[in-house]
Structure formats: structure tokens, C-alpha cells
Amino acid sequence: QVQLVESGGGLVQAGGSLRLSCAASGDIFSINAMGWYRQAPGKQRELVAVIGSDGRTVYADSVKGRFTISRDYAENTVWLVYLQMNSLKPEDTAVYYCHADWGMDGIDYWGKGTLVTVSS
Image 1 (tube, one colour):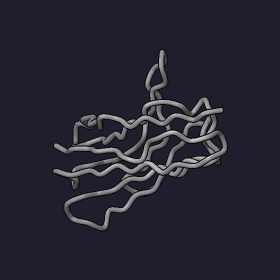
Image 2 (cartoon, helix red, strand yellow):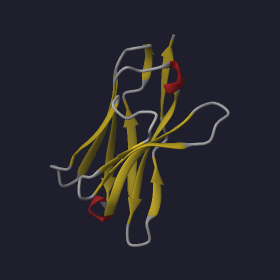
Image 3 (tube, rainbow, N blue to C red):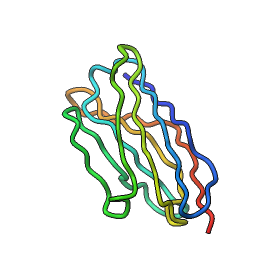
């Protein structure tokens, strides 16, 4: 299993930037893909961006060109995944969750989330 811990959320004005970080520990070598999801008040959790084991990325249409997902798998005990968010909009306000797809059965692991608030 793995443990995921997010950081980097906060309050920012529209047009500003934030970078979220996710630290994955535990059996990280069984991680297939990692990504970011978000959940706004009263809405369902939605995919923001995913990065696969081969480095390929997928983005939600709403964040393409503004958000960038990247990873740092250099350490043997902790892997890091980042979400650089630029040109933030009030509609980006949500709790952002780090996600890992793990093992042969594709088990889902989630962090506790970090709140991003974009003021207009």
C-alpha cells in the first residue's frame, strides 16, 4: 500500500499561480499512475491531470494550457508529483486530491486533500 500527502494549497487571486505537491511513500514501486482530482462544493470529484508510469499525461479540458503535472521519482522511498497551476480562475476553487493507481488490480489510494481557493 501507499500513503499520499498533499501540500501547497491556499488562497490566491484570479490570474495567480499555485503549485501543489504530493508525496507518495510505502510500496511506491507498485504505483501505475498518479494524478490529481478535485471536488468543488456541491459537485462530484473530477479528474484534473494524470501522469502514467511512462510519463504520458492526460488533462481535463478545463485546465489544458494552464495546469502542468510533473513527477520526481528520483528517490527510492518517496515519490513526488506536482501540479503547477497558472492563470487560476474562481471556478478552480476546490479541494484537490492526490491519487495513485496501485498494483496489478489498480487499487485506488487517495490523499486527504488540500484546499485551493481562487478569489475574483
